[in-house]
Length: 340
Image (cartoon, rainbow, N blue to C red; front, side, top):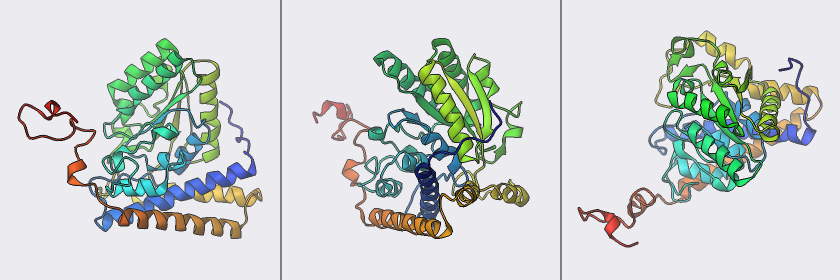
């Protein structure tokens, strides 16, 4: 791949990229507050620091390209255009949530926007994306399936199986390895025999390379090329995005394994700060316009939180819907015997 700076997109797209990254950052910061206030139950995994990897990917795709992700997927849903109100309500387990309050933080899904979900099983969304790529080919469409998974998931055997299937069948899929360098609290250096993960895809005949996942324009350029290979040449591609999350694995993680010096070093490359400098330097936005955009995003997030907090919880009678046969029945022979 070329090492020259990526070309700048149109000004309107640049502003949209910055707004989406800002929205993701503010939304997740508010989600952390909601969790600490006891209004979000279960686990909450934040992608603060990974906004460039998320937005650079989504803006390089067509709206109908199916996308799957990990349980760290609030940003993907927001970048795909899902309603912040519905996402926050889902995190709070409210009936107005994106999935009716039943999926929660780790299982967001918005099929209307070709976002096929975050998944709690590590690596679990990768084979689903392979299936989506196969389906696109079978139906005669030109969609490209994209799956985002971490470097920890890259150690799962199912990922190697998926590389093999995609390489063998020349499927229109892009594998994106979001390498934030830690699987829970374990450094990738202590969990993998090699520093780079993209050569694993190359071993199956898949064109693969690595880019700076903290640079949104570099990600956009790389994913655009990977999608072109999949769409126009009908074969798989893989990009490793080297990035960093500023928070622990989840809100319940005290994050004591990483040094303060390491965190400070990566915070100096905060994707929002570095991209703001690009906008200012290129004259795309001035300080006043940036402040106004931040204020507008803050209002959107405040509105989403207020909507979620005021929304009704999922009734107990509805909790089992779409999980078990419905309606629920205590008959020991099984509720499937009861007609809906």
